Each structure stands twice: as structure tokens, then as C-alpha cells.
Image (cartoon, rainbow, N blue to C red; front, side, top):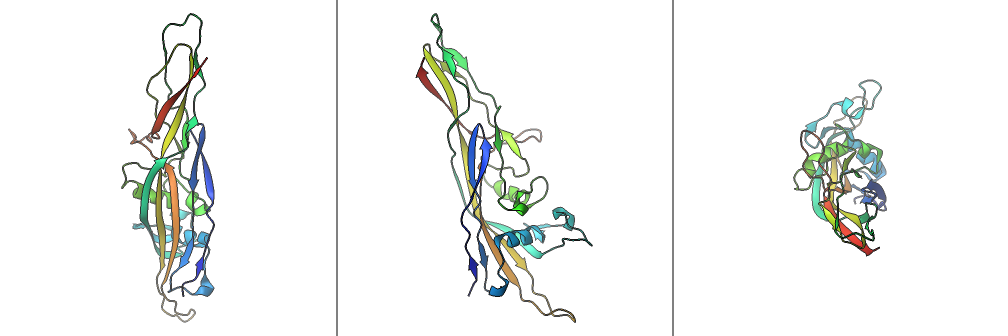
Length: 248
């Protein structure tokens, strides 16, 4: 029988455009029949073995990719780890007010006032729930996930910490009104599994033979849709600006 452990979903909150982009990182653990129930591992342990795989998402790793060391360690903990996507969806994030009020309330006002919002607010990028997945830049599991996002029109660049919201088009404040702008970010959610394989080992003079082990850690990653960038710079976070108008 497969040994299973359930983990409760937990939320990780991101700061975005004067608001909060909520991203859930739900991770569970499943040990397939080749693994012994007595050797049941936690989700954190499986994620660590994935991060320290000799081959991660088809790329041969060096121990220095995960801050390993040939003498002091850590060293490789598994032979292969792949992220297998099972679902992808897009949805609207929370709508939040992102500007001050723009009044057009002067007694002698006769014309509308034009206003716009530039990309002054920043949008937080994906962060992992577990220490191993929180690494960005050129290494870590989130960097390995970047290639999976590229298969979709709206991408999430895991190698940067934050990016700016796209600019709003021009809006007009009618005479006798007060206007403010809200922003609704476009969000995306990728569901999949980190699949870790530890090859079978033959017996030696000092160790017993061990069977192949296959470990699975389901994962859900959410983040804002990022528009294509230029000249190597991160793109802007996509979304929709809307105006709210009230009487003076």
C-alpha cells in the first residue's frame, strides 16, 4: 500500500500594486509503492531531494548549483527530478484602488481634466512556501519552473523579484466629479507535480541493496501575468485599470 501524508493548504501573500496578490502554495506528499512506509518523507524532504537532483527538469546539475560542496556537503540526494504540469488557468486577481483622488471641483471649471497612472507600483513575483523553492536568480526550483511558464502566452518570470504594473491609458475627470483608478491584475495558476526518482543501488561490502524509489510532491504556483520585456528587462505586469467617479 502506498503511504500517504496530507498537508493543509497554506497561503503566501504577495504585495502588488498597492494591494495584495494572494498565492497559494499547496504541497502534499505521496510515496509510490516502491518506497517503504517506514521511510515516509515529509514534503520538505522531497522538495529538498528534488532541488539536489543530479538532473533537474532535464538539466544536468552541479553540486554548486544548490550551494553544495564535494567535501563538506551537501551533495546529490536523488538521480532525477521533473516538474510535470497537470493544469493551467488564468483568472482576475483582487481589484484595489491604486491612485489618489483626482478632483475636478473648481467653481469655475468648464472642461474635463485628463489623468493617467504610470507604472509606479510594483508587483511581487512568485515565492515558494519551502526554503528550497524560495530560491530565485539562476538557480533553485523556481528557476527550473520558468521554462514551464514559457509554454503559455502569459508568463511568470521566476528569476526576478518584482516588476512594475503596466501604465493606464488616459482618463478624463468630468466637471464636478472626483475620480480614482483601480487596478485588477491578471493572474495565472499552474498545477503540477515534482517527481523525484532515486535509482536502485546494488549491494556493496558495506551497504545493502536498495530498490528504486519514486517520490511525488504535488504543487500549485500562482503569480501575475507578465508581458514580454525588452532589452533583457522584465516585462510589465498585465491587468486592467478602471475609473471610479463620484460627485464632489
